[in-house]
Image (cartoon, rainbow, N blue to C red; front, side):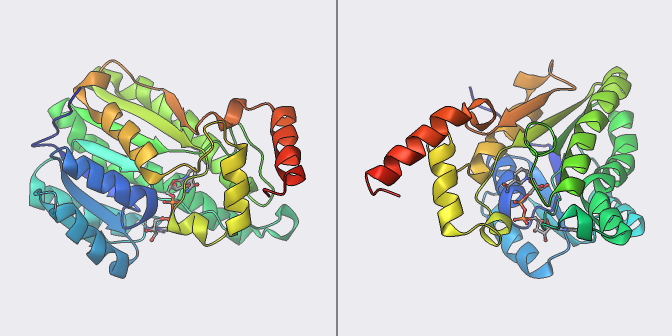
Length: 269
Ligand SMILES: NC(=O)c1ccc[n+]([C@@H]2O[C@H](COP(=O)([O-])OP(=O)(O)OC[C@H]3O[C@@H](n4cnc5c(N)ncnc54)[C@H](O)[C@@H]3O)[C@@H](O)[C@H]2O)c1
């Protein structure tokens, strides 16, 4: 099965590093021109080089994904450059841990803005462009957190990521008459700069052992599913949530504890 996205134009939010960067590069490898929108100018520059290496056009826009004026301006720039937008990947997100009891309303709103409202604002700016052409692919990057796993310190994140799935399903129903599909991906833990900044090497090792496929998730695991969902092979799939976690969410906790105790006994942990 080969996917050809040549002539398509993709917008990837938070695409300068981590999962978003891999999505940008992978879309480019399959022929799509890519516009990356990110707040980090430094990472953006490096990301654009990587995308251009794939022989497509790359556009980088430094914008804050929580600010409507900046988003609208960025999307106009994309349209000015490419005349069309076929693919929108709402990938931007942030996940600093904060105990619920210490969480201020200001922090809550800030985090809901970056993890949920950003998808609303980008989609709002892009959908009219897709509607005119009766074509579009929207992918929302959710998480297993909030849907399948409760994680201490991530109450706002669970709320936003579960919200993103409801957003996906209702929007899919509304945009189906325009042949625009809307799907969500729920990754398990994926090794990215964001995760490396908060997980210790020991946490990462334990996560590998806990996973039924015995490895940590990688950005390419998510990027490959994005490519499938935006391809013609997925033209009849909309309103769906695809979990990309190596089986983590169906693992039997008893089995995992047993395996870890055995490893400890053998001195391998
Ligand atoms: N890494 C994981 O384990 C994991 C698991 C499930 C879901 N996710 C989701 O995948 C997405 C990407 O995660 P990641 O681990 O690659 O993150 P990351 O922190 O490594 O990268 C996030 C990118 O988003 C950009 N960004 C952050 N806030 C922004 C803002 N306000 N405006 C513009 N850009 C902004 C950053 O500059 C960075 O380039 C997020 O939505 C995250 O919630 C990640």
